[in-house]
Amino acid sequence: MMKFRQVWKLYRYILKKRLHLFFILTLTFLLVTACHSKPIQNLHYTKTQSAASECRIVRHKLGRTCVPLNPQRLIVLNEEVLEAVLALGVKPVAAAEHNWVTSRGRQFGNKAEGIISIGESAQPNLEKIVQLNPDLILGEYINAENYQLFSQIAPTVALDYDVTAWKEAFLYIGEVLGKSTQAQEILSQYQKRVTEFQNAMGEELGKIKVSVSRFYAGSLETEFRTIFSFPGHLLSEIGLASPKIQQQLTPKDFPRVAVSMERVDLLDADVLFAVLDPGSEKHFQQYQKNLLWQRLNVVKNNRVYSVESGYWIFGNILSANTILDDLNKYLLQK
Image (tube, rainbow, N blue to C red; front, side, top):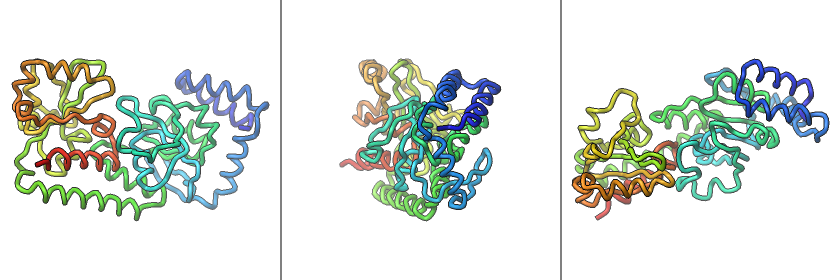
C-alpha cells in the first residue's frame, strides 16, 4: 500500500503543476484505495530504502539517481530504450510503445515476448506502472514535472536522445545498467558488420545514391528522410549518400522534407527504400500507379524496396543491425 501521506503529497503536486487529467484521475483512484488495498507500494519503498547501500549514483540531465546495481523490475518508457536494454541482455517487466510507427517490429524478434505494454510512450498507464512495482524507470523525453512524478514511484533516469546520436545513447544506457564493457563490445560487432558491408560494396559504395521515403496511412503526401534523421545519418556513416537534389533542399537539423505527388522526381535515386507505416499500402499503391512515379529511373530499374517503418524511422542498435540486414540483402544482390 502506498502510504496515505505519500499519495496525498503526489496528488497535490500534480494539481499544482496541472499535469494531464489522466494522471490526476489515476492518482485520485490510488488515493481513495490507499487504505483499502494490499501493501504493495509500501513494500517497494521499504525495499528501496533497505537497498540504498546496493545502488550507485548516476548523473543525468535532470539530476542524480541512485540506480540499483542489479535491477529486477525495470520499466522503460520508449522503444528506442527498449532496444538498447534488450541488446544488453536485460529484459524489462514492461515498456511503452511507439506513438507513430509499427511497434515491436522485426528488429525485436522474440526478444520482447512477455514484456507488458504500458500504453503509448506519450501517455503511459501510470496506474499499471505503480502496480508493477518497478525498481528502476528509464525513459527519453521526460520533462522536470514528469520526472518528479516517476521518481515518486521508483528511481528514474531521464535519458537524452538524438536520432543521430543513437550510439552515444546506447553507451550511456550501458553505463546506467553497469554494462559499459558489453555495450562497447556490441557496438564493435556492429562496426565490424559495417566494415564487411563496405568492403563487399567496393567502389560502388561511393557512387550509389540512396533515397529513403516514408509513406503514411493517414496522408497521401510522402517525404524523403535527410541526413538529420535516424536512417539518413546511419546510411551516411556507412558511406551511402542521398541524391544531390535532396542534399540541396535539406534545411539544417530537419529530419524530413515533404514531397507531394507532383514532385516525386525528388525521390529518384539508384536505390529507393519505401518505408511503409501500417495501413499505408493503399497510399503507396496510388504512387505506384501514377505516371510520374513510373517515369522514375529507380522504378524503371526495379530498385524500389518496401521496408517497415518500425525499424527504419527511429531506433537504436537492434534497428541499426536490421537496416544493415536490408542493405546486405538489397544492395549486394547479384
